[in-house]
Image 1 (cartoon, rainbow, N blue to C red):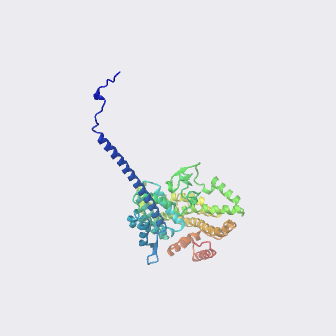
Image 2 (image 1 turned 90 degrees about the vertical axis):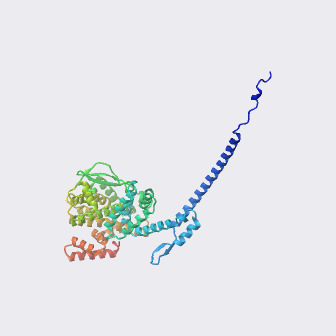
Image 3 (image 1 turned 135 degrees about the horizontal axis):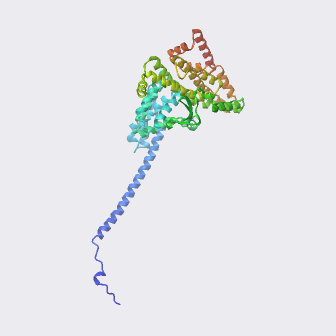
Length: 460
């Protein structure tokens, strides 16, 4: 049968858009090629940036130094710029000035920070760690806390002023709060091994704690400063009159330590662990004592800080002295918790137990004398820790450590450690006046302290 398809439909007319479509396709391919080239260029730039940022980091870890003519080591700006030019010309060189400024401030901070003793270093870590754990806390909060810390410590430890200033200068080099908080957490973790961070007394480890509330001592755990410092109750409350070292848990721990402390190798290891475990709560107690000393001075002088005045207004108290005394009682309860976990010997527990004044009616002179003795007991633990570290350098197996520690403790009066921590002649004179009734008694104390210093027990 012949094909009956109309002739006009056997041939399609040319598509008037065909040329345009072909051109569009060509453009599409070209755009894809251009996008691919752009992506390749971006990838190459990212690789270059990553390499240069690593180079900048390496230079920052070991920057070229020179003497500034005053005996101080500072970064050599010419040599630093030359290294940036060679290793990071694209991303480092344009920021050379800012990088140099940040590095020098970082070195200033590190130098001033390392000049402090371990206890003060940990205090600084706790302050900045607590601040950096709160994402919404402004930098002004940290500045205020550092200012209070500096004011409390600067009379005896003027180096804290440099740490405060250098830390705030360093934080100011960061572009936004997020990076400031990240740096704050790095500082809080700085110079700490994993055990010091997450171990039994680590700064990132929840610690046993007790809260004085409604006539009872509530057992619980305190979250670390790096996690906000919140309190979580665990177990049943105990009577307020029961000291921490009279609880079943503490008695069991002491019994276990006593059972193993027989002079054998295991006893030496146990003593080593006891000394190590007492360092963190001792530092915490010393920090609390510093706050309490400030409160006692304000109460006795009748001159109150802005912090107390604001707290008094917020609490609706009739006078700032009431607020200060309430804070003093609260600190005393917290102190009792800290020193309870820091006491490692019967002598220390007895000293602490007998030193604590009445929590309900804290008399300032009595509290001050008590703080001297309690602080001395805590500083004694820090001296024991340093002595143990020196001993372990010579005897890594810890053999004989228990006997060496017993000898160190045998003649030590805790007040000697507090006295040694006082730097100004006026503070030392006031200390002797409040603890001794006559010049002869004070002279005898000084002579005993000198004899103990000579043995090496109090070389702080």
